[in-house]
Length: 299
Ligand code: MG
Image (cartoon, rainbow, N blue to C red; front, top):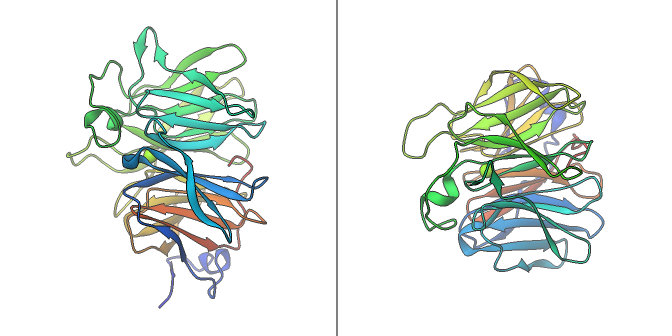
């Protein structure tokens, strides 16, 4: 069997036909939020329903990194390498300092509690951009069922000033997000309200140097499944979650090909020795595959 499905010929040069999609760890309930720490040679990821962040180390396997994790979901690293986390349970975005202490980046907007921050990315100027859908407060499965106080917005937090700005306010449920390599574009997924047949797509915004967004048209419709989380390679291709694996979408919005994964994929990140290894969180397991592409700077 092949682990890949090329829909456009160039996809064949993005992958290595003899590189396996390997299951690295399994036995979780819903994994998401992968982030690579090259300096520690490990991958962190969330096992959300079990309220823990796991660590996978090549050759050493899997161990618990943090439990309870406040039902953490998406992670990334800031420009100083510190862990930035979205917490459903505490309805906040945090930074883990190098000494292990926790700094709250954002937990309210205009005096109201955030919903359940889901995914996060850091821009080169140090600002922290995150989505705030309501998934984590709808039930007690991935957080604590509670009242929604705010619309499902996308925010930009500036740790230098403490400011929090709503940058996109017309989503059903924003989810994964990533900048293009030159940061002129911001891609944001809308995964819609649960239990309703909302469109599953990625929108694209033009991002000005001062951080304001414009545009926002539909960039690509994901099928089957949804663009829960995604990352961008150095050529600007988007590697997105889908129900049948990972979809590779070029900067024109064309689906080039797929990495086939036997479980529904939630998110991905690049890492490994040469940033050419794609780590894939998928329902109960974590997979990885070596690509002939390199992840963009932001982890
Ligand atoms: Mg997500």
